[in-house]
Image 1: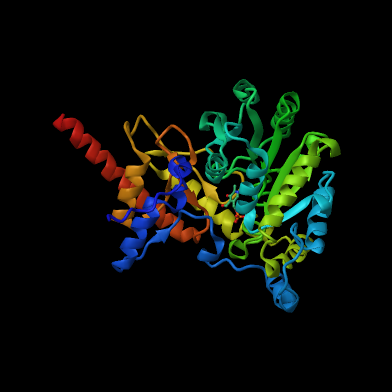
Image 2: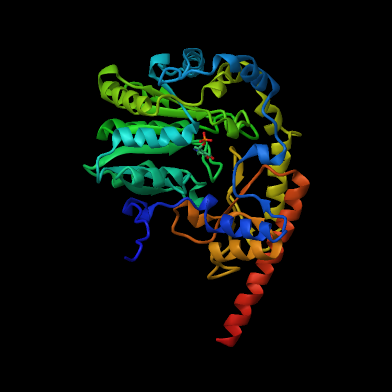
Amino acid sequence: MQKQTVAVSARLDQVRYDIRGPLSRRAHELEAEGRQILRLNIGNPGLFGFRVPQHLRDAIAEKLPQSEAYCHQQGLLEAREAIAAQHRRHGADAAAERVFLGNGVSELIGLSLSALLDPGDEVLVPAPDYPLWTAATRLNGGVPVHYQCPPERQHLPDPDEIAALVTPRTKALVVINPNNPTGAVYPREILQALVAIAERHGLVLLCDEIYDSVLYDGARFEPLAPLAFDVPCISYGGLSKVHLACGYRVGWLSVTGAERRIKPLLHALDLLASLRLCSNVPAQWAIRPALEGPNEIGALTQPGGRLHQARAAILRGVAQSEFLRMVTPHAALYAFPSVDPERLPGFDDEAFALSLLEHESIILVPGSSFNIATRNHFRVTMLPQPAVLDTVFAAIERELVRTAEKAGATRRVA
Ligand SMILES: Cc1ncc(COP(=O)(O)O)c(C=O)c1O
């Protein structure tokens, strides 16, 4: 009898996560052949020499002997209290009983969408987005409906456009602020308009605020929950970025809104959290010291700090390029430059990223991986040393020149 191959779920047909996709697999092949690849595709501070603050490591080491049992499905109470207190300092009506800890925000995004969605429910997701939001919506039977945040509008959403996308099936509105991949920080008026849309149409606000303190040049971040009052709102944060601890896998969510409206949601989250027992216990001990201790990311993002200088190197690289332009990122760990379509008509972000990998041993993420229709952007992280970024932009420019020459040659032949 012929042996059948394993049939996997058709739900995965439309699910993508290109940040670790085909380009990354090709990079592994090249590495196996002995090539050194500069990986600028993932916002992973530990890969670039950033260390988790010492007081977080000490807290985990000290509490390791007390971390051997499962803890409460929502997470350690002392950690949840520290998270709720931080939200309350910013004006949100948060409480430890409405905080859930997870193995990174990633796990909690899946958990929340699984709690909320029935097949065919629609979720408003920004484009570009952090692609897990689109993927997790599909995985949970939902339909992502993208609202545009284009460069012509400084990558900001237009509340009128969003309101026009609402249908009777719309369940939730995802807000990624500060934004990955664009580095946009949303002003209060826009956030208030998004709250008004959620209120009018009975939507749940899903606010991914994992970059809340990674801010440059005086940018001001406004958390959404304090503006949302009674509107059901889930705010997400974690240790991966602000506290440079991606590998610890610590994220949290805090649910706010009128008690009566959020009660079923809390029950659903509690059930789903219980099904996975609890999240990694040792790393939860780092939460309170992280939120109550010194603001170490601030030293990196202020003038003279490493991330500030890295961002300056990227701005310089784009300004010196014949082909590139960019909306200045005000936050987070990425820049999202685009290629001027007049200089390079027909530019294809995926083909470019592959050629850059083959010729220059650098891996970036093509813009179309972030669920936008245009194919002339790419995302680069600010995590390498500034001097390395200077060489990266020189390499990108060489590749753009090669692309332009190739396009010219093709046009001449045609
Ligand atoms: C916007 C955004 N949300 C969520 C995550 C997931 O973070 P983690 O699972 O490490 O908490 C990331 C990771 O890059 C991100 O950029």
